Image (tube, rainbow, N blue to C red; front, side, top):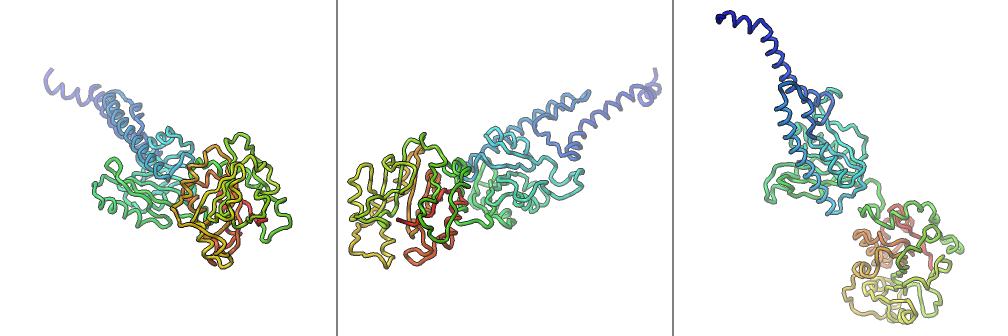
Length: 450
């Protein structure tokens, strides 16, 4: 067979058809994966690209799948690192409704589910080209204010970063957390500022609350501002806040707030033990802050007249600065006096208090929060009574800030619209104060005094 005859067979015979068919199949295998991803938004990062096998392409598919599996594991580890970082800063909890956006979304979703998040979603489509939506902009197909947490690492990969940041901010609920990974970046402190600036400059209704290096990337975290919230709702409490969680289902049973003191108001109070079983509690604890304000030596009963539990079952703590009034009570069984010199500030600003009859010692640095943590246990049932004075209201804010409010089951608060110093109470007036506490989940009563 001469060369001319062989040449004709190659280009016009069955061998040519087989070679052309094989080349076509290889080309199809190389192009169908990204084509499917563009058209349908499918994310094949999990390693299942190897299932697209054509004759003669097995080696390529196996290698591609191995590469994607390594990338998949890296994305999961990165997501886990982000979550642990935010958990450690008390910015995130497992009850958050989460959304993962862009590259690595599928592995991020699975990592969050493995960690304990139960409501997790992902956006897998190509960021700026989706034939299905016929748009070149990064729009998230979710309603405004629908997620508590959004995670993305696409900012330095999209052509219009502003659209991505604004869309993440749009779908975040007020108080929600957005986390964006940018990188790689340097390790010096100025690189953190450079990385965070593009994000912070784009935000309209959020503020950057945390920036740090993470696995050679920069983690930029921002929080969406709260809208029309009351004073105490601004605090971010832990997800496992016992008192708030337990009281949520029974808040509708609490007595309505009143503008003026009703007749025989004690009879109208919906005490918490009427709706919850406290028999499983380790201890019953009653704490009265500023007790001397509503006591004198002739008072025969300091407890709530119609409370459904016997006061003798409680471990009682009177927290005050007035030794002369309180000394008569600490001799009674089960009653403890806790000296809190800082409460004398209320007396010092009050023009109606007789200073000569109320001796007090120098402030010895008493820390109420530390005392509370040392005294009250997780399994205790805690009732707190206090006045809405300057010091007490600051203390109440501190209880929210520290999360200690989560261990106070029932609160009795005596309030007038002006504190001892003449300042308005937190929230503007007493009614606003009580509404704010109840909206925050505190089972609080108006206490009009004996």
